[in-house]
Image 1: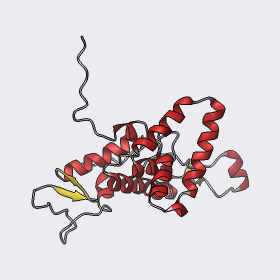
Image 2 (image 1 turned 120 degrees about the vertical axis):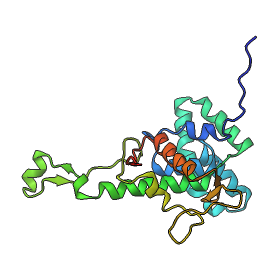
Image 3 (image 1 turned 180 degrees about the vertical axis):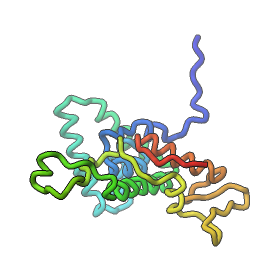
Image 4 (image 1 turned 90 degrees about the vertical axis):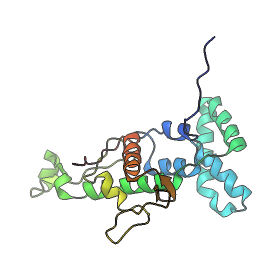
Length: 213
């Protein structure tokens, strides 16, 4: 008889992140998935705000839920309804949400800064040159998804903008147990923080500038 695989060591929100589709989901949708700790984040959010008497916050999540429900009904997607039932029953399981959400925001911001520089603009087309003879390069059209995007910033540059206890030289100060706390999440050391930033970028199919050691 085959031995059942152990889930020991598997991150509890593995499905939340492994299911991310960076070529289909927008930056905002990915952040919502991370914050609510579920691929069915709209339902989790609606249930949370309803249970905590914050119904004024429900509207944008309810709109998405209605659209998704209509699509699932028309497509005969029974699995979508099963997932919603599971989301109602179990809720979300956010882990390292503040850190991951902030990193995703910083990656998007870094992308916009990089692509906004004229040196990173694309060459103008023949039609554009006819209209604007002096314009040889134009800004790139950027989709709302992270896949295939890039920045000229490194993981260290991203780390500089994360909240942590630092000395006068802006170096992160370890806690009393030797670990470091960044965005309220405890890491083994600074290298593990850098790895987490790179891993998230890789998951989003987003290219950071390589760091020369």
